[in-house]
Image (cartoon, rainbow, N blue to C red):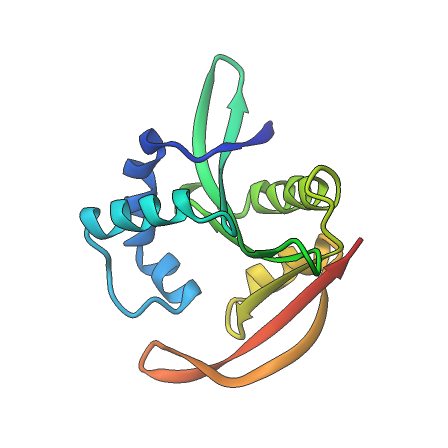
Length: 166
């Protein structure tokens, strides 16, 4: 199994909408409510036009067919200070297969290569141990804790900041 990062296109939205409203995804990111299709489409259009954001679909190549199984986003791309935040969503049916790790590695190759960034960083909710392990496996180091920074599951939770430099 191999994966590729490709430009996120409108045809990927249908799957993305279902992931965005999956309970584990909502909780893992600290979303407080499901989103409607029109809200997700509006968000996609805003992101597509923002020069400081990059959205890539994670596509699994399984022989004769390709399946969109996730999304990688670069937020707050800062070309002066050569850094960006990275976020990732892996479809619930594709989790725990190493796809997220491969996607982060490919995203870092892109960021530190063609995009010429020096630093990538990520914010992970303290209870999302799978994401913590994934970022650590990809060379990200824990840099700090933002105490009670997000409201999730009816309570405030800590957010762990991870970073990786070229």
